[in-house]
Length: 155
Image 1 (cartoon, rainbow, N blue to C red):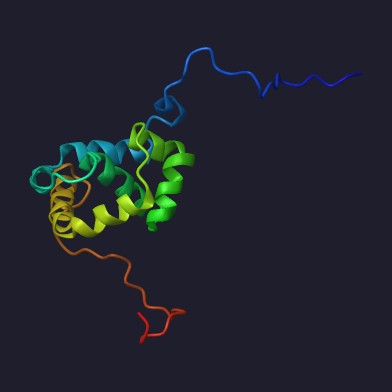
Image 2: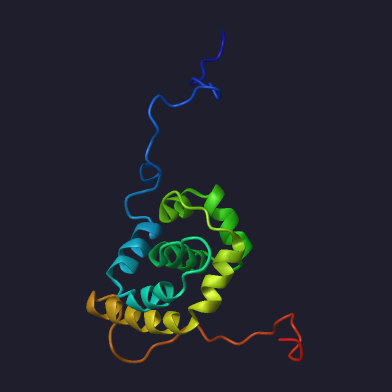
């Protein structure tokens, strides 16, 4: 008696292109990060970009922030790995919305906007406080000490 398998046709393409947003669960972390970044005031990023008129058009700061924050939240810190994930990972693709920044662009954005990141961190804490995710009082960031494998002289 032959086995019955589900249909498997890897060469079959979609008749209509699906939305990548449909491939993620409704309450995925990427959607949460996207909503939080959309609530933030990004005017400090706009001021710097308006004064810089050389080269190609810059990527939108909201998109760059979304992929960076999602990368940090999922343990991807390297600009090269984030650029690779934007091409391969569905959640990164959803956040990038069809943009594919190179690793150098991600690295430069992170370096050039360090002060704006500090201000955004404060905004993020205020948004989390106003939405009830955190309460005022003592906080901890998991400061457990342990031995590392890097020497103190090199780090």
